[in-house]
Length: 151
Length: 151
Length: 86
Length: 86
Image: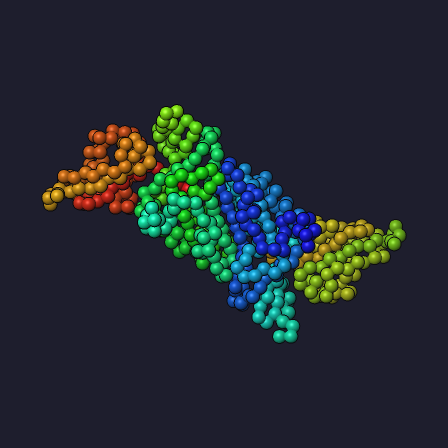
């Protein structure tokens, strides 16, 4: 949905291009660049995961991430931040979320990057579904396991 | 000097390949990847910098970085770390040092990455020379300014 | 069309809530003006009793809302399970 | 060749120290056996008086060393200005 992609610049349904994010914040005045990638893991609480799938309330999630980025840039001297969350299927090993923070010095680059990923995880209306061999479940929603259809 | 490059795997005289470092530590068991890049800045204490040049005591610097990486991996649960420092000329905007840390969770990925860059800066026998329009100086060595020859 | 004393709102459900309800979006019309979010939720619980048993927060027009807020015609009300992005 | 009572060491200088000295490496031979690092530095200061005025640490065989350590034949002694990598 090109229209959705344009309206929600902090969300993407395709593979995250980290270099493009870095290019948005890097400059010859920023001596420090901190990048965080969250990637889909093989195991979750002992169970083997085949695939992750992310759902969002797109307009609210995009606005939340934009606000979080603005908060980080206001809070940490000279920081410039870009963040992108993936929606839909996310194969193992691929990034589900990326945050890049450039700043004149490393203390602010680390702090801004950490602030943004922590706040995205705590506040952005985005939900992760894990797909196992035998069914699916929404993370943090204990009663949501659904056995695989036709399995 | 291919021989030196082989003997000191944490030092390089060419552009740092961040993707290659990431590939060394990433895995489907690591849900978090934190990367730090130190890049050459245009300004240093108000003066305009044209170029950075790094010198090392190569054997000792390489051993120091290897030890620091091992310390981080021992200290932070599940962390895998790779680090590389550039030597020789480093043009503005290019990375002089890169640290990548993968871990099952983001707290350890951030902590391991931060530990390694802090320790490299504090302990590795590496020195940065700034080249200005009118001369050169070693960072942190107040009396080392040398006017440009023939300037 | 709603008269001045009636309102209509759009209700969005997400993730495990949408799965349990079997629906992602409902339009509720002919509601009393100034109905509170709490009262709207009581109506929804008639169709979706599971809402009494699972945790969620409520957003009104894409901002987190208190449950004593009064709704207005055209509001978008979203039921948000605990987030798990990242 | 050094006799049993004499030793030779290699001295390395880096960064601003090498620039000031105009040399990056010196071999010092015919030194008394068990010469301390302090005593070696006193000899170097004759040729490079600036060493009395600039800060540096000393590594012996690529490990940081105390200045009262006694040198052995073949040691590599490095004078390290305050580091500034990263």
